[in-house]
Amino acid sequence: MTPSTIITTRDGTKHSFIQPPQLADAVLTVAYSQYHSLDNIYWPAAGLYQSVWSENTKREALKPVARQVRVQKGELKQQWLALYSALLNLSIGKRIDINIDPDYVRLSKETNPKLDGQWHIQLPTRPKQVLLLGAIDKPGFYPWRVRTSAATYLKDAADQLHGQSYAWVVKPSGHAEKHPIAYWNKQHSDILPGSVIYLPLSIKDTPIDPNQSVLMYLKNRLIP
Image 1 (cartoon, helix red, strand yellow):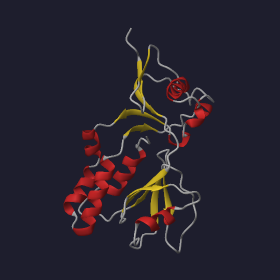
Image 2: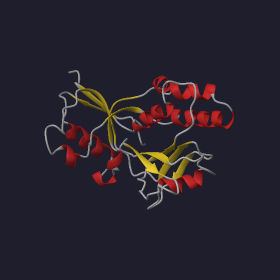
Image 3: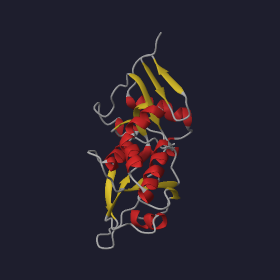
Image 4: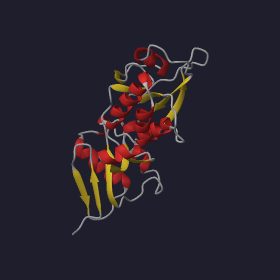
């Protein structure tokens, strides 16, 4: 009998269901096939995805970024190029904006839909890093630290912030927040493990803001 639902996981396993499972049942099936305990899962980053993107799909989504690599010069060109390369190396999919923690999902029928077709469930362990990208000198992964703000992380990655007052923080859940980072508006907000801190880059010759394209792209990231 042909399965109605196929769910892939972070380790490449495929789970087949003859009847569409409820979301909670699907999550628990994947969880107990990967871990001995639900406590090992980092729920802020757990996600349900319609698909995992191919290299071509990622390049298509990053066309506004690729355009900046072509039209910019000097240091800005190099920063856009570094950003483009870093984004291509991330695992990306079409993320559904839904909390998949079984304790929440089982509260009602609305939060526990049936899954029919092909899906991907990502259940990562707790990350030990944050990722810094954008208008900085040293983009890349940095060790996560307790009670450390975006402004503090950026001091490690950028010699100067070029007068920018805000940075974007994309949380492990995919939700993006604007964090003040200047001396005059600085407010402390802790950064969750697995977050991305993005300092927007200057743009030119485009009707579309590629910085917004970057944020949309990062919202769909899969944390391994």
